[in-house]
Image 1 (cartoon, rainbow, N blue to C red):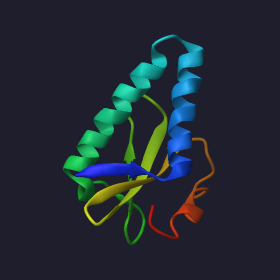
Image 2: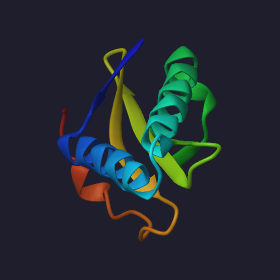
Image 3: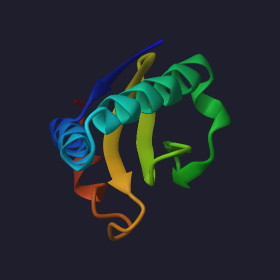
Image 4: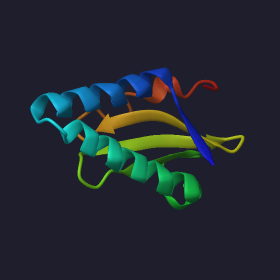
Length: 101
């Protein structure tokens, strides 16, 4: 299974990479490695992660970094709706749910 980003989620992801890389050289790359490993697991078994917003939005957490990936599966594609820092207001991304990517 493949994945695609909502444009705002892609921006969040890129901002996180830039932030970590600005803190310590190589830390942004570490974030990318963990993010990609998380998405490999999600794509392998997308329905095994807990529902965050029924009926179809699920959440997968990164292990080392304080982020959750919020996604849904539509037509065999994992649609990433948010790459949400744990300190962000819960549900801030709900406006992205309205349509397809």
